[in-house]
Image 1 (cartoon, rainbow, N blue to C red):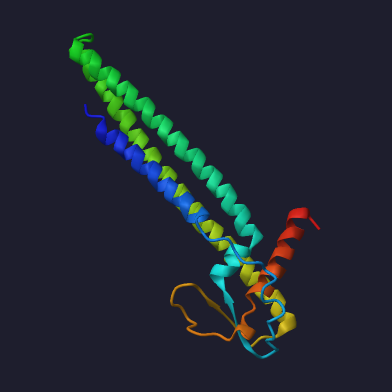
Image 2 (image 1 turned 30 degrees about the vertical axis):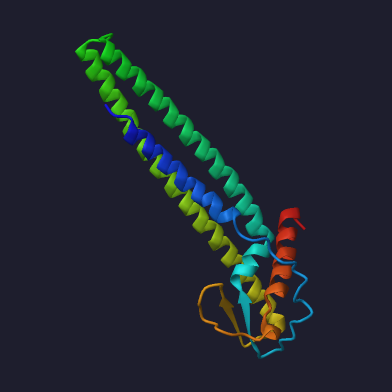
Length: 202
């Protein structure tokens, strides 16, 4: 029984988890949320926009969730490596016993079947953890966008903007926007205030 494919599968699974970690931790540090608060002069009836990438980086809830996610991903990564090393050692021990004739053919067949079952279970476990992390990542972004939608609706009862658009770092719905109509920092400041109130129960 070959153990190279088993270990490579575990390493691949751990590598995917690492990619999730890097996805959340390799972003550049956000600018101060004070940057454009005074520069926003949009009035009622204007069409304004929010820079999603910038908002996410400055939003405290996202940063808290990202930290929790990264810690969990690192724990899973270590767990996968530990399980992989344990199975690898057992396979090597089995191969040594077979080569030295220390077990009967019947025992060899039984142990090989057991190792194959463990191999499959480990592969299933790796896939399960990959799916869980992918789902958690999606939930994090849904929570952020839900908070954004809720806050925009609340804010606009006072501001009365005609329309609020979004833009990202990649080509999207807005190719150019006057900075005076960029309400990103004002929105982030308000959302962070709301989040702090939720955390403190006030």
